[in-house]
Length: 306
Image (cartoon, rainbow, N blue to C red; front, side, top):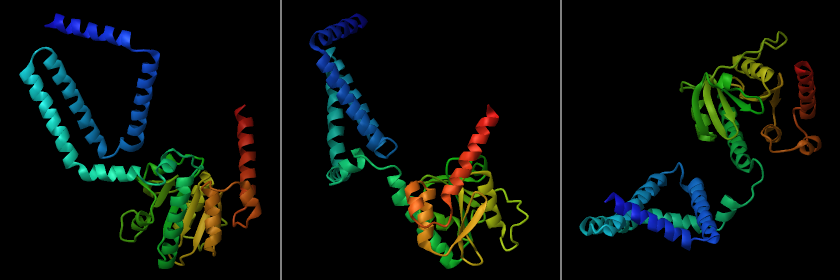
């Protein structure tokens, strides 16, 4: 039995050796790369992943049935092959809605542009995060609901965010409003946002120790200023008493009376606009000055390290 299996495998290897050319090898590699791309982009991490694994098992079962038939185990081989055929045929009927939905998804006019076309940097974040933050701030300011959001930039703030409740959720207005609702356990702490993801909520931030700070500022504003002193993060604050919207950056706190200016500054802080935009448009913060100060600080650190 083992000898027969060995002879069949050797004969198959010899047949492949004589029939396969470099062109065939290239074709196989192209097909494998294409299937891997489809798996990575559309299947991995989705509910369809289990379905694909099931199809792969059925293919292995079909291959095993052919091996059984090759060794004259006709009853077992034909039975297994028939079962695979019945299951595959049944799967087409059972998953007809999913197949129709997938074909409709492939037929979208902007399908290739969305998945294979070139996108500008931060295009997805610009559409989502900025809009969600503005809508959130509008509602919180109108209802005078206190909130504190840390917008992570270059400096890593994991040492602070790890203390809070880990969420790792996509930024959305509904989620942020739920977190800062007064009757929820996380509304008192800060939310840490990295890119388009809410990393954690209920985070306790270091308070500023600036003795010149006015007594009018409460714990939420002092925490925002304190966080901006120890990192380059921008802290977005909504006052619970007045509904005022402010941003703490580089140890300074600026209030926004105009939502348009807030949107412009958030575009810069989130990395959607370059230096030309900063120079040609009115902003609340002097971003050029802040950037220059950071460059000087980095040069001093480099000299000290040398």
